[in-house]
Image (cartoon, rainbow over all chains, first blue to last red; front, side):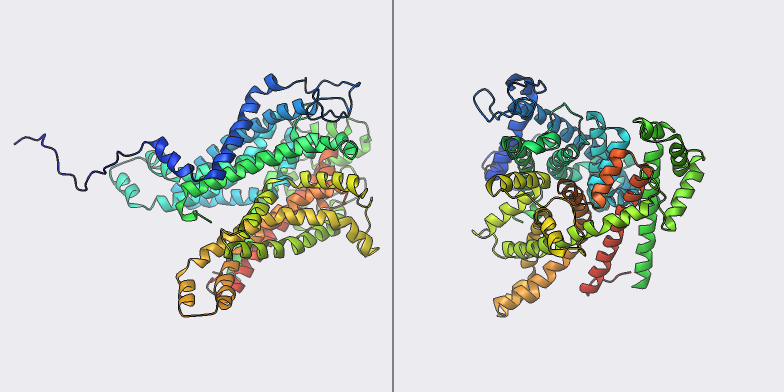
Length: 299
Length: 317
């Protein structure tokens, strides 16, 4: 008797070869036209942020007092501001700041938040209670108020904004991941792994984490947009990356506000840039949620 | 019921206590007298005021004692004196700023909430129709276009097109109600729009979820009029879960009011906080932060109570 005889399959083999990962993704995504379009916008934004200095036509911070408040023209695509700075170049370089802060804050906040949420949900008990009350405390402060206070303590700068915004991101990740971990840790396969002698660390990161990845990705994608919007709000209030660095928020505030009636192009370029960016992240997040979370499909 | 209320109130008190520690530590984290050096760096403060500020901030005291003094004051409802505004207590400044903020928030809620819930319901009931699409678009725009972009664009547009500028300065509601409402018109409309997006989407998905429930199918199957199914079966259940969101809305609206107050020069608590931050008025910052946290916690508590009252299935324990 030969062992190598082909085993009888329990179910008939599918006639079509099983599609690869990319192909399966493509099948789902190609019906998500809006999701794809927003992904393209996000990609475009990333490219601009990456190659910004190459496509900027002027030094974003150079004052040119012979060319103040000029309307859009071939020389200055989006016009110039009161100091004669080229708005097109400032929007392009401003994209960098928004992207760097948005993505870093979300990466740090979601990673730490997921780890804390995982531990909180998995370990439970007094530790969980303690962590959740701290999360309550952070969430009890209206977002902008907490951020304003923290920025003022740390002094506004690129790194401090990343730190502060990641503190703002963290509670959401903690909440969601903890909730999922509480459910997942009771599932049979986790108990089976435990019975086989898996350590807590292994259970958490090897068995539970992969199963809570979908909600983590969903909050991450939505939160990038919100983080960019919040950074712009702080910047607008004068608590962002300090001038003269161009940010979308500070281009709409301060000195520029006095001249907007005579020079509406001061509003248009940065306003459209923020809005489209946040819109794209929100729409992408919606599509991602539809794809990853079938329970919510269509809602 | 009362046991639940007490337990939740104790929970909220614990959270408030944690907030007070954060706030205190954040301000104390600045190296000792550095705070005062910063206050005094522009030379607008006398040595005597510096001493007063030092005492006020408890910089002479050990950390624990300083915290106990400040937190004790908070428990008694006394947040201390402003470091910058001589002779003004933090309390009195918050109290003065409270009316404008309250007005702004309540009016925005009065416009935004019914609109959001109404349109959210319509959008859900008419899923994937030509009524649903524009409403969904409006909702996602409300989420995506920051309120300050709307405000700045609106101001620019109105002044260019109609040579309209919102009235300058602030007039109290009791002094001249009409003028007061004119000042608030634009900020109220904008923050009403900003707050409605999230709520509209949540209402819509809540309606969609309820519509798929078995009891709705049963109601339809037994031949109830569509109107009765919608009002008595779908809406009553869908709107219950919408109420739970009102708590989040309060915090969200307070964030938004900061920006509206700054743009439209409304002397509310949000603008007071920003001014305090710019002037490094640390007692005022601490006081305002505690005030905001208390408001959010109390409204969350109220919403949870409300939830128990309107949904007979929920037993508050």
